[in-house]
Image 1 (cartoon, one colour):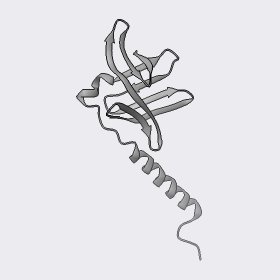
Image 2 (cartoon, helix red, strand yellow):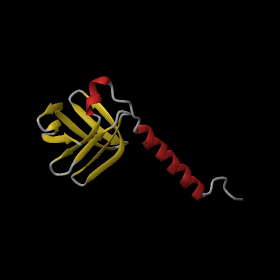
Image 3 (cartoon, rainbow, N blue to C red):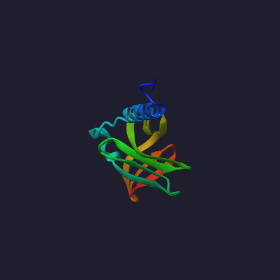
Image 4 (cartoon, rainbow, N blue to C red):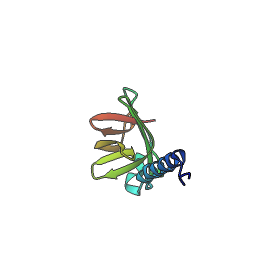
Length: 115
C-alpha cells in the first residue's frame, strides 16, 4: 500500500511552511510622521547604503551584507532592517538633518548623504 504523502510532497509542504513563516516575520509597518524624513536612499563615502521606503520596507548593502525588501523598524534610538532572522541594526547617532552638503544622517558613527 502506498503512503498518502510522498516524500516529495512532504518536502514541498515543509518548504511552503518555512517560506510563509519567514514572510510573516518580515511584516512591514508604514513609517509614521516622526520617521518620514528617513525615507530615501542614504549613501556613505565607502558606497554602503541604507534605503527606507514610506511603506515600512528597507534595503541595506555594505560590508559584504545585503538585505533587500526587509522590514524597517524604528525603536528608540535604533533602526533595524531585516527579513526573518536576518537583520542589521543601527544606532541612530544623528537623525536626518539639513546641512550645507544636503540631508545627512549618522548611523553607527557613519555619515550617510541622501541621494
